[in-house]
Length: 411
Image 1: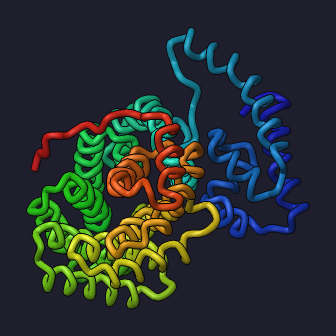
Image 2: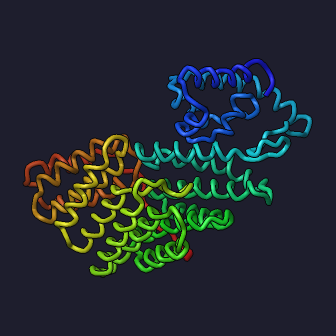
Image 3: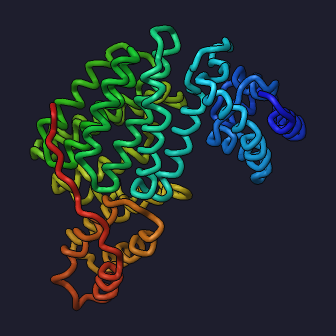
């Protein structure tokens, strides 16, 4: 980096870290980065992306001050880069391995982006974030894959691309764009295969199995989940992923009405999750925890007509999904509401629906809105019940959102 402002940015990162009394390793953990990468940043040998700086700013408690310094430095760097473009060349870049002159994509920045997207998605839903992710895929990820070299770095790059593309699929699905979701998941699977990562490919299988189940395609849901499990035989650190795949298989079996096989699959998922203990999931794989399993168990048991079991599981979701898990909590509340309709507790079901209606304006989730509409349809014949009319009025006042797309499944 050249110029006073970029140098000032590097110095500011070092100063803030010293003031916070953090080691490089501690800061790297807090900002979802790596110690070696941050060492290069502090010494002016790497220029971080905005997403990395945002994570550093939060980890250092800078209140946006570090982002301001970065913006000032970025303005100074742009004329230098434009001069290189006019000359028909790019300035030398420092790669992830510390070597100059190679246009190595910033995998650390992509990792930070994945964590940031997952955190935002939990709070506001995928509809609002999906266009941004698509722009990121086109502007950052796709060019990087075109330039990827056949070396040790390329596997990590394709793994990062698979993770971002998998998230794009979930956000498209959450926004009701299931055709786009299927395309993203298919690409993510190919990227994971190119990366040579069996766990990551299995992680995408779990995503595809979920989508197949939501589309009512039980055979594909079961088959794809089993294919994912086959990729994980003997793999270390994959217990949470194994649990997720068993749960996806269970949902497909529930759609078939195979009660015994479904409950056996849920038991397999519980055992796998219990064996994970406090271990972290394998790199790039989605986190799967007790709340996730409880949510899927509630849907399976509801579909099988086990209302008591579904009620217990849904209540467990609500208990576990507090804080920033707005959408997951809404799913738990809506599942519990459908159970309450089934047992005739209509006023309680309407009250839960009204609670979710109040949260929906902050969410851009087609899935939440769709399940609210289903609850409204179930309660509409009971307008005379206290609270039902009020809930239906709240539901009618919500924006309509977009219609769901039905994809053609390629498998």
